[in-house]
Length: 139
Image (cartoon, rainbow, N blue to C red):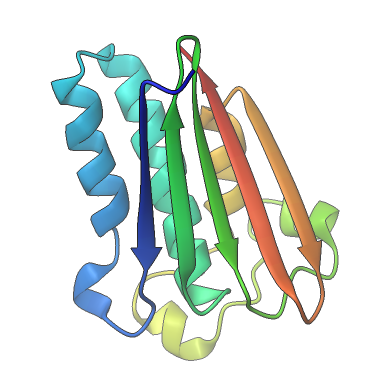
């Protein structure tokens, strides 16, 4: 049974909102008394996935669920998808545009940083149809 659930809209058109969903969820975790190391890992993973949803997926949604023994976060976009997930997981690999890189994003660290901070990472992607990233963090 879910103890908490919330859906966030990830708006790629509003650069002032970048990171807002992960920041908001971090506050929720603090209010719920979640251990600081888990909050830190969750915030890092969620931020990286949120930014990827914006810069690679053109925006989308994030659904967060807190259960008795884990936190689950599901990101979904309708962007171009990931042609080669194994390659995308390599540190430094990026398909970010020059504009995105000028903004300080797109260094190819997002997916590897997510992987380092979660208990489980699942990526489902179909080129031309979008990507779904599911993160699970044990409590």
